[in-house]
Image (cartoon, rainbow, N blue to C red; front, side, top):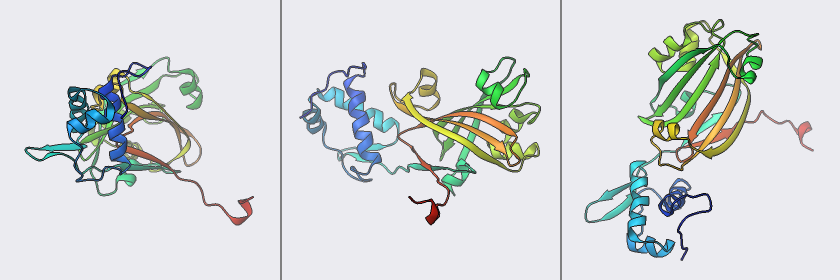
Length: 250
């Protein structure tokens, strides 16, 4: 039996229990349709009061990972982990296939003084940058929150097209850019901010995957600097490597 009170980072016991059960569900240790152990059994396993277990299970229910059936117990619900492939042409719509994906513009602004890295990467030479904040959903459930930076001279009124279409790719086509490629991606993880927990419908203290990326037009002109925060419980990032020839193998 594992006894839980509070972790050194200050996470309360129910959050730690929810994280462990969430991991077991996502990794398949608790299969879809499987019945969760009873509150008493989970309380004994984690060394906590049943009320603490109840909070943890309620958090999983809010994420649509489990469902309670009156008189029968709580079961692992149908859930689909989005495997998002990051390659030369990274498009979330390609990763989700036939499943519905939609983007929502939260806000936009022309920033007179964008971060130095943004200004240098986009070669703005002192000009303002277009900043857009968005939330992306799959099957109606939010999976990511993104910050996009563009050169407004290169992509005029992009925010207007994105607000109407809910897709960066489609919005870029509207301004004459039919193709773009991924130049670089770095991935990390951290605890979600207050704003991210609200926009992504997350319990406080949840971990998000953070992907920082640079996109460019096929000719090499820098196009976008972006930072996307993915729900770690719903998204798996798959890094696509270029083909390796026999000569490349040591």
